[in-house]
Length: 194
Image 1: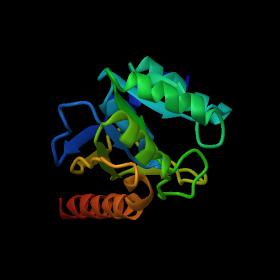
Image 2 (image 1 turned 45 degrees about the vertical axis):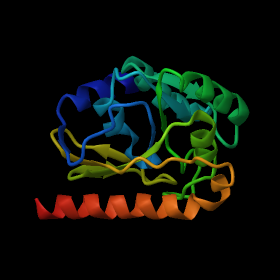
Image 3 (image 1 turned 90 degrees about the vertical axis):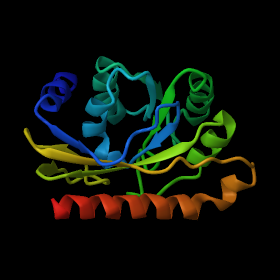
């Protein structure tokens, strides 16, 4: 049921892309609450997405697979090692997508595992900011967003960020958090100016 809802809803959405997405493989990171419009936008693009192994994660995994994603089931709290190993393997041919504040939060706060994945895969991290002009917001840990039909979605992609040294796994987290926050603020300003 959920998978068909995402597909049908996606057909009604108006996307405004403010910066070009990368043409090469990368690691997309975006907040957990923004997953629905991005699932539709990036469908059938050879992307592997890390999704929680919980029952809640199944609600995302089913529509993701319908839309052409490869689902990697696992998180920092459950099945994490297996998910990491699978992401390393799939990154040889796929872009990787991660919600680095999932599956339980805190909301819009990065976890260090994203830097670990970037270092070991050699892929750049590309932050993605999302704004929705008309939406339902759930009373969940992340204030999960569901776009209303015919809503406008503003998308901004950040500059690629490489993790070249193992030591940077510990030191780059504050910088990456600032970049995510900055990009989201800039994308929100674009939305307000339109």
